Length: 395
Image (cartoon, rainbow, N blue to C red; front, side):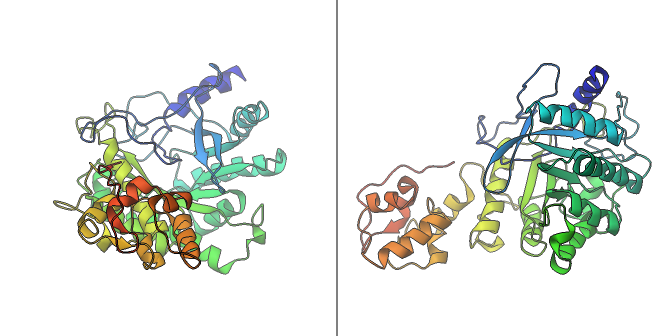
């Protein structure tokens, strides 16, 4: 077990670039750049740090985020595991990985597993090893909690189907928003065939195959991840493909990993990306997923980037509502959701409340779950601007 723990410590260090949860508000200034986006904590010095994932119902659970192997035949220009880089390589067999994870699970250090891998001896063989690990966990150890399985670039349809049968979440990292940008990041990968195609298969299976085939009677959610700032992609490019993935392929989340240079890689001299850019992309993707916002609504500036100094919903309101605020007692649901401080639940409560009595004060709004300070500059109450006008809140 000691040898397995040593390997796990080394391998888990290489999985830090994989996103699994919503980022917190960056602590640095909007234009400051940082070198790490890891938010981990240690539960035991002999075990690797623990990450966290938000699962269905909004519950956060501690998870082990790791790789089956750090050996990789791909030459991704930003990755520390790239082929040819002088670094120590470690690998687990499926049985070893299942065993060490169950050790941590039984000690209640973790409640879930995020399992990815370097591509070694081909994508098909690598995917088979991931599936073997999942199968051992589900059937030998009767593991019934959260499991996120990575789908390798170039995996076959039947492997994607098997991953869906075993996992609670599956993912394919697109890394870049299109084939042109992917060449700069991962020249050995093909955008449509190896990366987008498996995501299309996942949605097709969800639409055509009954979920009783899955381990828990539900098909897993699907996510992807982009590397932000590793090439010259714009926010428009990233969010255009994010909108397609969310609306057409029903992805639950699109994650954005801020590029951080790794020594002895082709991009080692490229500056790290701002955490604020990553954070604004997350905010914009939620507007596309949960709110009636389209690409045309997003407040891009310059050559296609979101402003870093304020959230995109607030930036939209500044352009559209500052001079023409919206009447709370008459606006429809879609319009209400464009107002800062009003989310889906708040909008529903407003509509239900005003059927009985008009909303007269900002206190009334606050009692309905609205963040009144954010909403105040952009609303009317019975034709009047609220008496309280707060300063602009940028976050």
